[in-house]
Amino acid sequence: MGTTKEMWQSPSPRNSTDIILPMDFSQLLDGAEVLLFQGSAEIKGLDYDSRRVRRGWAFVAMRGEKTDGNRYIDQAIANGAVAIVSDSAELPPRPDYPWARVAHGRRALARLSANFYHRPAERLLSTGITGTNGKTTTAFILEAILNAARRRSALVGTVEYHLPDKIIPAPHTTPEPLELMQVLSQALAAGATEAVMEVSSHALEQQRVFGVPFDVAVFSNLTRDRLDYHLTFENYFAAKRMLFEGCGTEPPRCAVLNLDDEYGRELLRFCRGRSSLVYSYGLDAGDFHARNLRMTPAGNCFQLVTPAGEIEIRSPLTGRVNVYNVIAACAAACARDCTVEQITNGILSAARVPGRFERVDAGHALGFTGVNSSTVYREKP
Image (cartoon, rainbow, N blue to C red; front, side):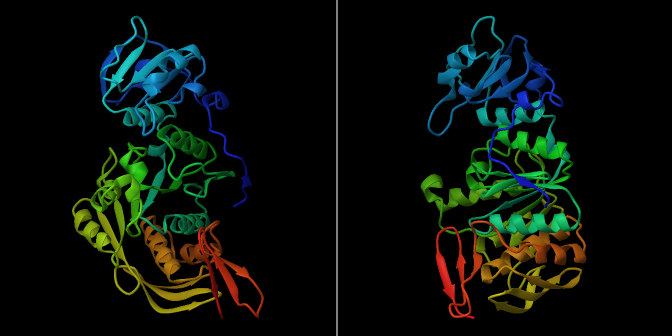
């Protein structure tokens, strides 16, 4: 990739003054669901964390899972905030102080962040990947295919964030709207034309990707996980479905859905008539599926059946689960108009995904050891 690794540091207007210019408070609020508005100010930056606010910035005070940002308005003002955006219906605006009351704090944060960074998500062709399992590996494979197609891309996911010129450790699978717009803005500045994003159910439920137009959306599977947050399986699925409804945008142009998962089949019915292109995939059936599958310790080989014909696939990634991941990435790559050569070269180059099922050479006596994020597997050749 020709990239370097850096420690995560939230990009900031104060680090990007050559491309990000101040804007009027009313411009910052363009398109937000504003219920009350007063005052005017020149805005040089914005944040939802009062501790990071600097002089000349707007503070977005919103209710969160663990605390209410409206409790920290005084701290933000003390740090130099010149305007307040609040989602509190009870809190009266400060007299003679630029103030906006909004209907939904995180949706407002998404819109304001997009406005301040010149709507980077709208200038990238984005693929969103959701599901309980497989998001990270599918995203890495798709990114490898886009690289093989010589398309400069950004990747936002669980393990790390990729920009065309650097790799940054990821603090969250899907970041808050402000950080997401900052990352996408940096990606654009580095020449990116595409983005590949893992989109978690938490992010969808919390509207972190509100206003992001996805060209392609991929669904991998749904298992009984994350119920500590969503409480019921129905809520969990409803959160995943938001990606295919459109997150404050039109539905994705193309939906890629796992036919072997019952909720993938339900989404297939849901997406027909909404997305202009719907691809199904599976191990043995679907628009994209495998034929003559051979799984070995060295990787997987199969004929990929597609609507346009068959493609010979050789992947260094091992295991049945990675057959699904490769097929999903191939379907998304076809939706993004990648050629057969670009797809096969990209898959061949995707040899490992950090922290996922990885092959470690342990010598001929032991075979090999595969390591994922939580379990160690030992298999014999």
